Length: 235
Image 1: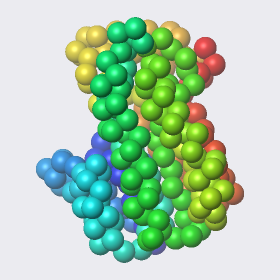
Image 2: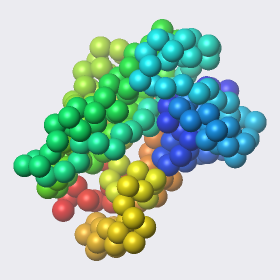
Image 3: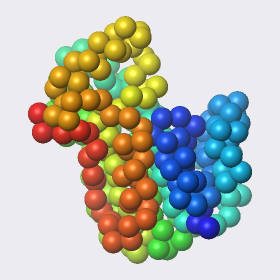
């Protein structure tokens, strides 16, 4: 069996990816910061999943944790942050800086940490966001964070070949990321998106997980950033 490490796999898109991979016969290693949440996730996933509690912003501990895993065939980086959103005139640049510290640098640090241990013919899949291309007012900061990751993908694919490097750019997905909004406001926001998104609905974690698994299994795709957004970036 191939081993897939999912950084940030205790909820949302990472968790959905873990479930799908296990159903397809992969072994999955979940990395999560919250030990209690990690333990609950492992109970739900069953015997083909193991996990390690680690803070991806702690570089030295992260390296030690990765080294303890053993063989790694694929890495999925579902680490995310919540800061950096807001209209530019009022955007707190310290918040934007924290947004980079919460997503951009942890994702790159995770990718660097696995390089000595990942199979040469394996893959790394970053999870970014459609904010990198949607041009929606209020998302310039988020777009900068995610766009910074995406612009590195094709260069890394050439530099680290034959290791495959790709990214998935989700649109509006029904995950806990949106829980910064009160429940009523969250539902109102989703209803508005349902009227705007060409496919008529907000996405679910499984929609993203299917594409991630495709990028793991298809050995002839590299250097690509692929949107899974229901057509939102077309609007």
